[in-house]
Length: 41
Image (cartoon, rainbow, N blue to C red):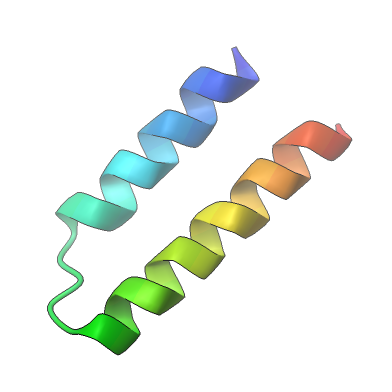
């Protein structure tokens, strides 16, 4: 279930528009934080 939430978050970040390389880097960082937070619960 946690993996599904993390995947949904990843899809949301990607689909909301990372128009630049730096924007993509921030999105990837946020997804990493979500996955780390989900793993810690």
